[in-house]
Structure formats: C-alpha cells, structure tokens
Image 1 (cartoon, rainbow, N blue to C red):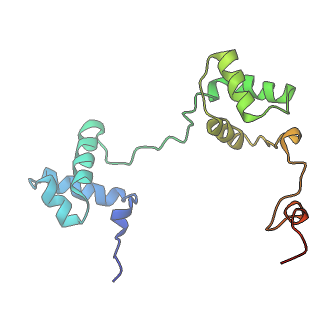
Image 2: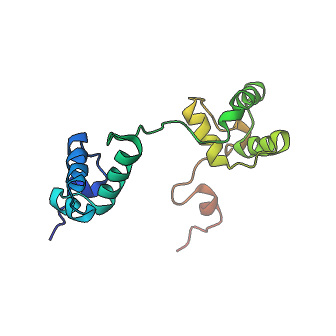
Length: 150
C-alpha cells in the first residue's frame, strides 16, 4: 500500500491568497488550529502567517536569501590568487595554507564547494596519480608467483 503525500506535506510554498484566507479566518475569531484544519494547512503555518501579518502587515512570503554563508567568501580573492600562483596545490595543502595564512580552520569539502561555486576547475595533482595500471580482478603480479600445476 502506497503513501499519499499532499503537496502541503512536502514543504511547498502556499499562495498568498491561501495565506490571506487563513489569517482572515483567525481575525474573524477562529483559532489558528481550526483555521489550519479548515484550509488543510499545518497549525504551525497558520501561527507563522498570523504572526507575519501582525509584524509586517502582509502575509507575503519572505524572500529567500541565496547568499553563501561560507567563511571562504570573505577571503575569495586571497584564495583565488593562491591557486593561480600555485596551481598544483592539493586540497589538504590549501587547507593548511588557509590556516597558516589567515587562521581560518576549514575543511577540504568546503574548499571544494567554494571552487564549484566560483567555477574554478580543480584537477588532481599529477604527482599523486598512480604509476601502475588500475586492477580488475587477477593481475600479472599475482599470476607470476603461481606455478603451472593445479
């Protein structure tokens, strides 16, 4: 048996009209929970929309901020300059340089996300690549040590 998931359960944005109707129902004397049940929204939404209308005079959804909260953004020019001067640095080395140069403790994953956000192509260091072929099953090395007898 499958589950029926309503759009409201999935965190979807609700229309301004629906928000207004819920707030008007509460203003007319209904409780927030009863208004939520009537309009098939969560009680938490009815509470938030009523508070939003009281605080701002509008039920319009707040603008979502698309800004990055990464601490690397403030040092973006420094980091880009470092990578331009020394393009063969590994992520671990960049992490160490950030700590030594700026006192910024950051993870390799955060550095990789910064590079992705700023469309900086980051390639593996050639010195770290394997000199040997990738293994798939039995290799020549394992066969050398075996005799031809079963």
